[in-house]
Amino acid sequence: MPRHHVPAHREVRGQAPGGPPPWGAAPAPPARPRMSPPQAKPVPQGRGKARGVTLGKVWLVAVICAVFAAAGAAGGTWYWLHDSTPTTSVTGGVGADYEQLQSGQNTPMVPTSAPGTAPDWTTVAQRVRPTVVAIQARVDQSGTSQGSGVIVNSQQGYIVTNNHVVADAELIQVIMVDGRLFEATMLGTDPSTDLAVIALDNPPDDLQEATFGDSTKVQVGDPVMAVGNPLGLDNTVTVGIVSALNRPVRTSQAGSTVNPGDEVLTNAIQVDAAINPGNSGGPLFDRAGQVIGINSAIATLSADGDQAGSIGLGFAIPVNLVGHIATQLIENGQAVHPLLGVTTDGSVGEVDGQLRAGAAIEMVTPGSPADQAGLRAGDLIYAVDGVPITDEISLTATIRSYQPGATVKLLVSRDGERLEITATLTTRED
Figure: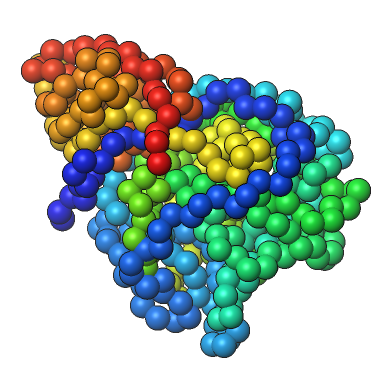
């Protein structure tokens, strides 16, 4: 199968951790951010065939379920996996104290079961279900899309969800666990990370906000619980384990032309908990009831939207990245993206006499962090801060886990020699 290559003159850029300001701040309502140009291919709707590029026979789709009133049938906005090579599961990044980012009021406390014992999912579900909402977004006259969201600030009524759930919505309605319905306003979206923040127009006083955990502490095998609105079945609970970490997931909105910088490339948390269309934007909880990720995509064996469903391969955006991006969306309506400044392609090179996969540099942007750090065309980047890099996709996804200004240590092969090169990321100019 032919490989998918990063387009020529594309720079590696990403999103990153580093001390965001409090969630609870009440900024002036930001202007809606400029959206990326629409993509060229038509978005599959109703029961029509969806098109994309396969990885074997596995497809990756965004887990949003759209209900089109005219046809009376479920369809969706689908995201397809292009061509990525999984990386070894390694935790990494910078932790954050998310308690400082939230109001701290009406937060459900969940007793933590001891390691090695079975999680008390009954208690966890009872405590966290009020923090999860179902979302209905009327995109145009043809129908309404359904997704999920999680309350991150009870005082301001802030809710985090996926960009593909609410992007370009004319009307957003939020349904609470008790059936109450509220209208919401868009605060900001970030297509590059597929995240968005909406705010209830008139938030009630009894909202419960979720507690955010630390995705750098997540380990393969940890028990997890997903809560969301799959297929319109609101507040559905499913459980499983963390299957892999730092899984490079490349998705782009089928049916449109994404600005190369707005492709969704994430080092995701892979889980085997059942995640289906409509779970998009919903939280992934750990055994203590803390959010460790936002569910955003699933793999399916079929290219037909009608066949999309859980096969035990779900992907969540790590919560540390969610917190940093969402804070920027609340304050500014948009998020900044870090830049390394290289054009790369997947390749194999020799390091100390051993062959390794990595991202081969084809071009270094003059004046960029990569240029200043001394990277050259022909270098093979095979690790970033200890996270293995297997191709251009995993490099971009890993860089996006940092914020502008972060310093990263790159392991590089140059003419078969192992080098350690430190680069300080800057802000990508859109």
